Amino acid sequence: MRLAEIIALRPLPAAGLLATLTRRCPLSCAHCSTSSGPRGEDTPARALRRFVGGFTAEDRPEVLMLTGGEPLLRPALVADLAALAAAAGTRTSVLSGMFFAADGRVPARILGALRNVDHFSASIDVFHEREVPRAGVFRAMHRIRESGIAVSFHVAGTDQDAAYLADITASIRSEFDDQAAVLVNHIRPVGRAAGWAAARTVPLRGAEPPGPLRGTGPEGASATPTAPCAMAAWPTVAFDGTVAACCNQRVVDGRPVPEHLRLGHIARDDWAAIRRRCVESPVLRTIRTAGVGSCADCRSLARRPAALEAAERSGARPAAGAMDLLGARLQHDAGAASLLRRYGSDRYAPLVLLGGPGDEEESA
Image 1 (tube, rainbow, N blue to C red):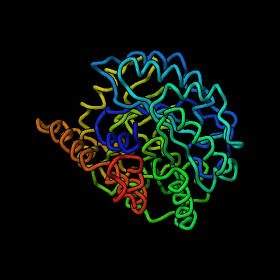
Image 2 (image 1 turned 90 degrees about the vertical axis):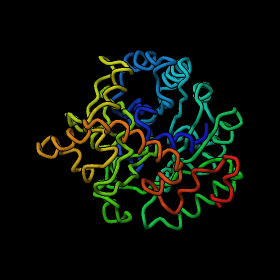
Image 3 (image 1 turned 135 degrees about the horizontal axis):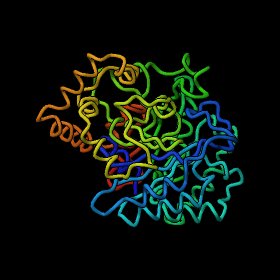
Image 4 (image 1 turned 120 degrees about the vertical axis):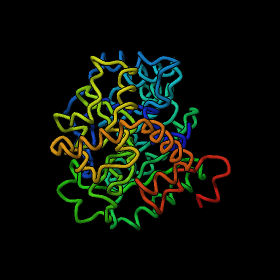
């Protein structure tokens, strides 16, 4: 499964499920949006298995994206969830910080878990490279790719990292002969980066990023104020099992989750219920088709009764569901690069197409 396929599905309501497996991570990257570290919460494994095991061939997400923290600290859980998802026809993607790859080797327990997944992405940037050498990451990625798993890279930087971004993207393209897609994001002042990144990031096209596409590592997306928001399309499982309609890190980490963005909990709800709430919520339809302002405006809707009522009224109109699906379909048909021009790096957006037939010219 190519990264471009995953990203193109991102605007479609409930086409994917984002699941954080843990807040733990052996690395201490300065830009980590989740502030992950050696100690942290693990998302309840039993509840995750039950929830994913409830997918059916008739009612399932197209993609299950596993992230963290570092999801490969729980390789057995990764393997189990991927196998459960595959039984229903859902494909699985994993994003890792490559903590295991300093010497280029892939431990057997990790490679065994990855043999159950359809796509594997590695985070690599100036911060990860301080802890895991580029040569080691590349060697490990070759090993994973040789096992028959599609691979890609997620790169992050600030406006002061232009030379680094040019170097790392060129290095990936050369090393993998343009057969590994690259998604480039901008670092935002969220998580551990909150204390230093505000003055170093490129100007936002909105008040703040709605979160990674998820699986992009640090928060790297920004939405134009009062514009359709594709990031409210996929349910996101947080560390405590709460399911949010938005992958914005402040929503995922904050408690309570704003009621209009809370879809349920994996210990009490099944996929069918979560999908139905995601697709049919009038407020979410309004957010996806018209927007409600900035991400901060969206989170604060409950404190603005008139705005919340207007969003509910707009999303409850007879044609609202059809408009929601039409808008999502148009974004899907425009393709992954088009979406990343809005939510990632405009300059590097075409690199998401690498590894696919006929994409070389646009990706050059």
